[in-house]
Amino acid sequence: MASPNNDENNNEMVVTPWEVKGKVDYERLIREFGTQPLTPELLAKLETYTNKLHLQIERRIFFSHRDVDTVLKLYEQGIKFVLYTGRGPSGPVHIGHLIPWIFTRHLQEKFKTRLYFQMTDDEKFLIDDQRTLADTQKWSYENALDLIAVGFKPEDTFIIYDSQDMDLLYDITLEVAKRITYSTARSTFGFQDSTNIGWVYWPAIQAAPCFIHKKLTGENVPALIPAAIDQDPYWRVTRDIAQKLGYYKPAQIHCRFLPGLGAGGKMSASMPETSIFTIDPPDVVKKKIWNAFTGGKGTAAEQRKLGADPTVCSIFQYYFFLFEESNEKLAERERKCRSGETLCGECKKDIAEKLNQFLEAHRERREKAKDTIEQYHVKRK
Image 1 (cartoon, one colour):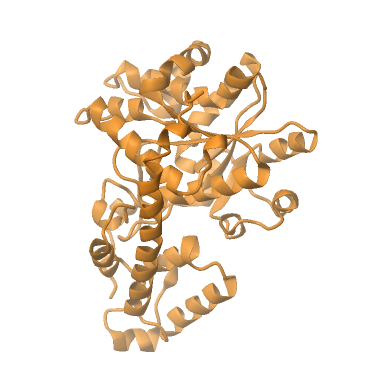
Image 2 (spheres, helix red, strand yellow):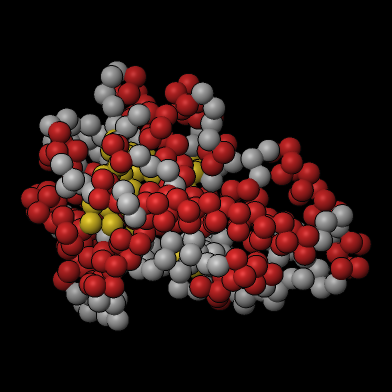
């Protein structure tokens, strides 16, 4: 059964590094952020190295980029790249966080490259007056277990915990901070007079892992950052000063947000009732899915007659993002939804089962990760 729609004001799009709400217009974000769409020509070149396009590329879940074409051109010339992404450890990991990590693992395997993964426990402490550093450090550990459970290998994966590893980052952050004016930072991030100075400095810290590979290995290679598009402002200011420091500009490839289970907006830990966390027990998953917003009608009879709208259905997005690899089967499911052959309850039951199977396997790997987590720390050697 469909849920009530949000009012128009609540559905206004807001996309910043700290807040995403409303219905996200990705074409508008490409224009406003000044990124480039992933063209068929670029995807064809990527496919020559990966043999087959990943599902998230094929369905344009990753849809936008900066300099992926440059990175591939350098790769053809024998200049490899490293991967860099991260997590703001403010709470448990949800399914939406796993989406770009799954694609990052794919890139790591296909290009046989390193991943530097930044746990930004310092940022989450700085931006929230109610959060202690002990809280964010605890969630750094917990979130790292989820990262490892996705399947990353320790020999090529280096987790950076900001509050522990600042000695590795600090000299780089100083070089970055010296070259970014407050005027630039304020216009990019919207800092106010009330913003604490730690938060103002923090973009220099997020820039540092773009360049840490040279410090650790002596190799100067570009970094490719797979992440949701809300993080793009950090890389805009980083790209502006990279070449002044003697580095390649970091490249990005941007993904869409997995919608929450409510009416509009991304999946967000701040709205736990509309998010599926990796630590949610099966009964909680079922309850959240059963209460999810769909594109269905008020009654089964009405839906069988008029059909439903999968484009606004949070349940259909789970098939699109994660649980239906066959495009033909996905199209058939969409057809049955629109025609009224399939009711929302059937899809909810199916997705709840698939999610719980997925999460059970993930939690088993997550538990095993406790024995190996130290092998992933950037300082392990």
